[in-house]
Length: 172
Image 1 (cartoon, rainbow, N blue to C red):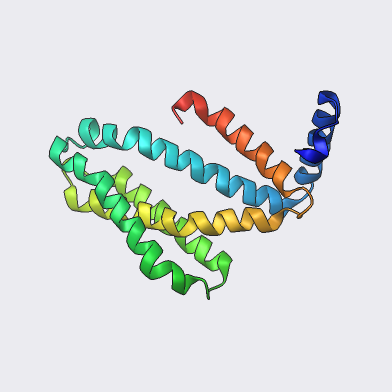
Image 2: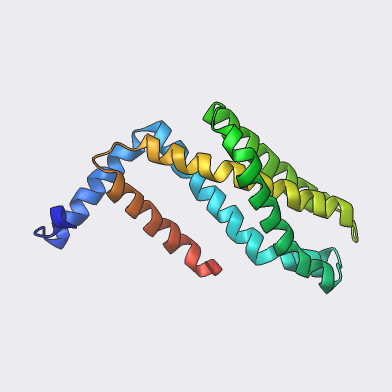
């Protein structure tokens, strides 16, 4: 705030434009932005439409649908407590790829689940939530490490503003 306190609004926008232009020329930063961006979109759609898929598409009873948030929370907590400390010693890109692969496989299982296929759906939900719990911290670290220290706060601010602006019409 202090460094832009005496700048005019037009100068701040010009600085942001220059930063975004420099980012577009850095493939690793753009890759990190896209991973975090699509991860957040996937999380939003999951929270918004999973209960609709379970109730209307797969005709699950309401009592089972009510268990899903607790199940995903428990899975994420187990991942954070028991698995993430060990993944700190693993190559971050391998852990990120593993988390994204688990999440994608979970989504595929949800899409391919037959009506009333409780076992397949719960396996998909566990894989998706566990994969996201693994991938999310590594994606955030990848994003933070891809940005130079001098501009990190401004770039993350721009990214979060764009992310929220894009996702707000969908209920985020």
